[in-house]
Length: 360
Length: 179
Image (cartoon, rainbow over all chains, first blue to last red; front, side):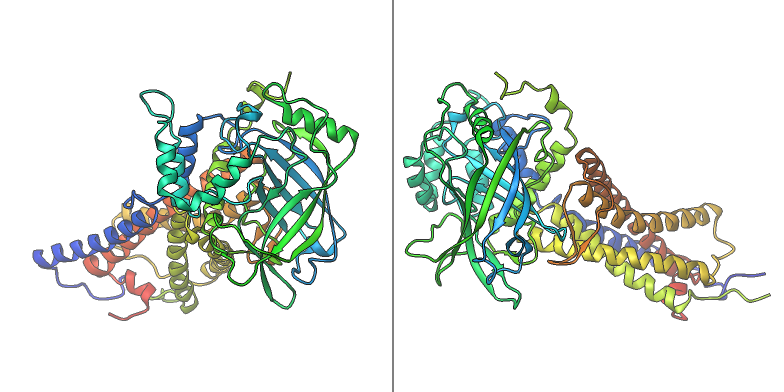
C-alpha cells in the first residue's frame, strides 16, 4: 500500500532549495527573536522583577529564607470585625460578614533581618483577610503616609543610591542627597521623615496603605480610596523600655499577653482631583473618612515558623469588591514580591538555623 | 480495507490552529509578565490564568478527538529517525500542553494564593499550601514553558520543511489545502 497522497514532485533547483531553507530559518529565528525580546534577553535596559530584588540583595546582603525586604518581623493572628459603613461602597465579603479571620505581620522596612529596631523610623503591617468564600484581601501597609517616589524606575534609582560602594563596603554619602535633589516628588516623604522617630511599639503606630484602590459596590460603582489602620486606645508609652536591638517583638508579645490589640480600618474617599496613580502625593484638605471596621490582633508567633512566613503579601491579591488603581507601584510591588517569594520559598529550612534576633 | 485519510478531521484541524494561536500567545504572555514590573505584569497575569485553563480544557477535548478520529499516515519514504522525531515531539507537545496549566494551577495553590480566574471566579486549590513545593512547581512551570517553546519551534520548522522542501502532503494534511 502506498501512503503517499500525491505524485512525486520535481526536484528543487539548488537556488530554490537554498531560498526555501533560508525562508524556514527566517521564520523560526524571527519567532525566537521576538520571544527573546519579550522575555527581556534582547532588552537588557528593562526594569525586571529580578532587577529590583537583586538591588535589595546588593544593599542588604542575601539572607536565605528571609523576605528580601521587610526581612525582620513577627507573625500575628486575629480577626476583622466589619462596621456597616463600607458596605454601600464595596461588595467585598470582608465588609458584609461580621467577622473575617486575619493573619498579619509586623516588620521593619529593610532587607536585613538583623537590623536594630531603632535603625529606621518606619514600621510596617501586612495583613491577609481570608473571606469565607475563599477569596482573599492582602495589603502591605507602612507607617509613612506617602511613598518616597511614584514609579518603580525611581524606586530602583533610590535603591541604587543606597548600594554599597565596592571600594568601601558602604554607600557613598553623596548619593542619597543627589538622589533626593533629582527627585523633588520625595518632598512630602522627606517632610514626614523629619518628624518621625522610631517608635517603641508596633501597637501604637498608624499604618497606611499608601497606594490608591477602588471600592466597587454591587451596582459596579467605583470609589477611589486610600486606607489606613489607626491604633485604638493603645498607650503611646509601652511597658518596655527601648533598649537592645529587638524591643519591638518583645513589646508586642508583652502587650498581647495582657489582651488583644485593635486598629480601626479607615477608608479615605478620594476627592475629585486627588492623584490616584502616584503614591508619593498626599491627599490634602478635608476628606470623608469611613470607619470600615476593626482589626483585632489576638496572638503572635515568631516568623521562623509562624503562619505569616509563607504568605506573599502581594497587594494585587484582592477580593471581588476591591480593585487596584493604575498606580504603577502596585504592579511593580506584585511583580517584585513574586520574585522575592520564589527565592525565599525554596529556602525555608535556613530560617531555623539562623541566629534568632528575637531571642535574648 | 478503509483508505487512509489524506487530511486530519476538520475538528482536529480547527483545534490544532486555535490552540496553536493560544499556546504561542500564552508563551509570549508568560515570558512577558515574568520579565516586567510595569502595569503589563498585572494585566498579562489576568490574561494568563483564564487562557491557561482554556488551553487545559481544549487539550483534553483534543486528546479525545485524536483518539476517536483517524490520522493521516506519514509518508512511507520518511526516514525512520524523522518518524521517531515526529512521534516524540507530538508526545512532548501534548504532554506539555497538559502539564503547564496544571503546574500553574498547582503552584498558585501551593503559594496559598486563591486561584482567581477573574475578580470573582475562583478555582479550588489543587494542592495544599506549601512554600518549598511552590518553589519547585514555579521553577518547573518556567523551565517547561521554555521547553514547550523550543518544541513549538522544532514543530514549526519541521512543518515548513514538509511543506516547502519535501512537499509530501504532511503540511497539507493539517492545513486542509489540496496543493
